[in-house]
View 1 (cartoon, rainbow, N blue to C red):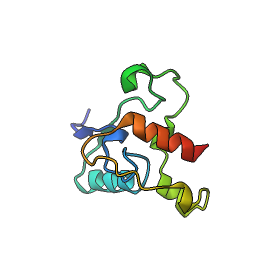
View 2 (cartoon, rainbow, N blue to C red; view 1 turned 90 degrees about the vertical axis):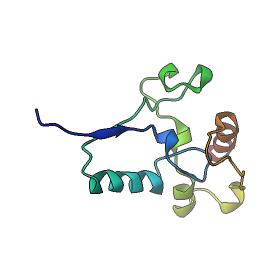
View 3 (cartoon, rainbow, N blue to C red; view 1 turned 45 degrees about the horizontal axis):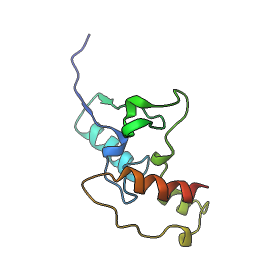
Length: 110
């Protein structure tokens, strides 16, 4: 087996304007970084909808994806939602406010 290196970084830890990291442009930028630095592995935590304590290990479904990781900017770009629906929430830069983000995104996604 060849030696390789990589990182452990959950999607929620990526930078993002929506209060939480998502599968948007920052995820693609991170993948490009991994390629440039010749990393072979990107290990992530479970991606299901979280349960008690917002822990990725407390998912209530092994098959569903967490809607918090949907990129709102991409939805705007694809004209699936209107700009009026997306009000600036002024989320913290260094810490995810899970309850606020979930409330905001669920309203948008519905």
